[in-house]
Length: 112
Length: 117
Image 1 (cartoon, rainbow over the protein chains, first blue to last red):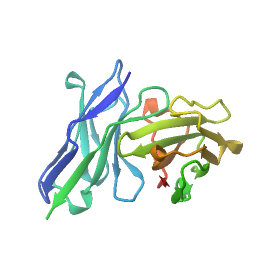
Image 2: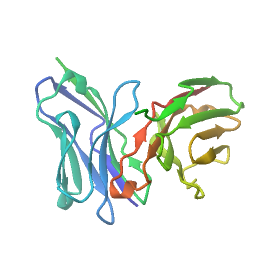
Image 3: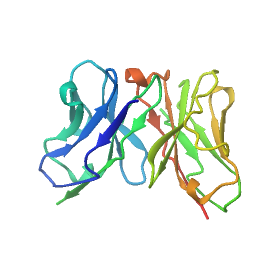
Image 4: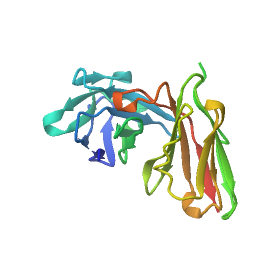
C-alpha cells in the first residue's frame, strides 16, 4: 500500500527565511505525489505535483519540491517565507488509479 | 469558471438524526470524490464516483454512510443516525477524468463543517 509520512506536525520560521516541509513516501512503484495547501477556513489548493517527469517540480507562490527516489522523499521548499504562507500543508500520494492518500499535515507558522 | 461548491457550509445536528450534504462539481468533470477531515484521523477518502460506473465505496466507515450522484453531476452524501464521532469537515472534490494515479489534479470544495451534539 502507498502512504506518506510528514515528519513535522508544526514548522515555525521567520518571514524572509527558507521553508522546508518534509515528506517521505512508501510505494511499490513510481507514484504520483502532490502537495496541497489549506489556509484557515479555506478549501484545499494544489501547490504542485510530481508525475514521473522532471524530479524538481515548481509550483505556485515560489514553492518547489524535489522527488528523490533513493531517499523516498518529496520535501517542499521555498527560499523566502511570506506571512501569507502560514497555512497547513499536506503531502499526498495517489495509491491507486484515482483516489488520494493524505499525510497528517504540517502547520507552517510564519513570524514577522 | 465556477469551482466545486458544497452546501451547507455548516451543519449542526443532534445525535441520531440524519443529515444530507450536497456537492456540485466543476461542470464537465466526470470524477467526484468525498473526503472527511477530522482532528483525530486527518483527511480520509470516503467514496469515489466515475461517470456512470458503480462507485468505489471502500472508504465509507460504516453502513450509516451512503452517497449518490444523480445524472453524473450533483452528489449527496447522507449520514444516517449521526453519532458524535461523525463530527468533521466533509470535503468534496472533482477531477476531469479520475486519473489521480497519473497526476490529474483534484479540485476541492470549501467543505461542510458538521457538528453532532
